[in-house]
Image 1 (cartoon, rainbow, N blue to C red):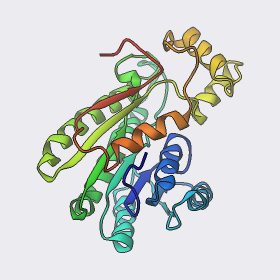
Image 2: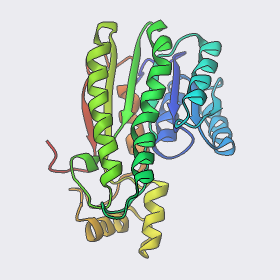
Image 3: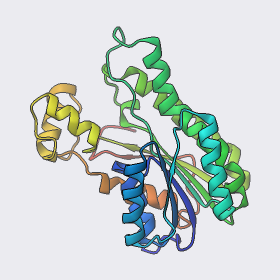
Length: 264
């Protein structure tokens, strides 16, 4: 399907790996101009090269830490100098410290909110003038299914993502007058680098999505209806649609991509 990204200016924060890169791949295959933002120059450069091969010859890597407002502002200033507008902003950054309530320190709570919420806030704030300059514009923020299916090991991360959901809903209302659509994607148990790393610590082959889901069921009691974990490439197309020109009337939504659940 043609999503309408040909020539569109897009930014994927956290686009160097995992679900962010899977989303950027979809944009590249549809002909978008892409800037991927993250902290690791080597990871970003390799990803940008691959995006160029897939169909985005103007793919650019921008190094920035979203916990630093000045770096975020500089990143979007560079986007503005290059393109002068922005059609799609996709924020995929989010992991925070794991641990139960008694274990987490103030600094870990602060880091969870700085990473899981405030990074998105900084990026949207810096991008707004460029989004408003574009003929059409979309914002997609990545949340987490733990907001709806709580885990006692993730109270800070989950609280930050719940706040992200709230701010995203507020933004959808604020920006409706500009016809800028804001939506949220809530991935379920996806075979990410972090989740595979956790699987290694409990003696499970994280590369096997069936074994990974069995371990999630055993340790967290959070099985999906499907008997396996998801793959990053199964999230990318959903986020890409929400960020696209094809999405012409969907805003303020939270879309679960979780292999089946009891969420409402």
